[in-house]
Image (cartoon, rainbow, N blue to C red):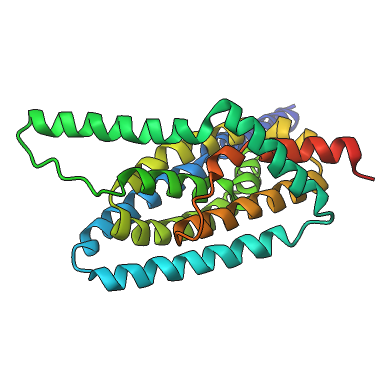
Length: 269
């Protein structure tokens, strides 16, 4: 009997340990979800701070050269991403329909209104504290450009879904490093409006992370592929806009990211 009692005791202990280990594993998985977005937020803020610190020591001609270099790389990135489409008709129609929806919704206008509102509130707050209220003349442009570039790419979509499903935050960690580097350059040339983009990016990626289970069930690989290609066209527009080639209203094209998977679902064979 004592031997049997010992076996029962050992079995109960083993079961308890397994249950505890399972609970710890679940807790770690749920806790770690979202860490990619948090990291992305912090790197954008940190990059902006560094950029503001070094920006004052960068000559105007050097800033222009840096901007042109970043603009060219952005254009190449946009072209390479858009070229991965299996059928150019999908991103083409997505961008056109998305642009119509975006203009009707006045999305581009909304971005600039938000940027100007934050700038005005910050100026008032600093004035009340008797501090200097000097803002970079490209404050709002920095906010809009950084927000669009950091949100549109495929890494933002795929990384958030992976993070939300517990597959890991590797994609968003890599994206965070890239965004942090670009934030340094943007902040040095366009001021601390770049930091404001961190809040929009965090909110956008957080929604996708929380909705990951539903998105993963609905979005096929082909849908994500065409969404990425559509985003590539928008990234190309950001590059052209950043280099002052053409003031493309990229924010108004954003609904195209939602249009692309719908078109694939309806017409892809």
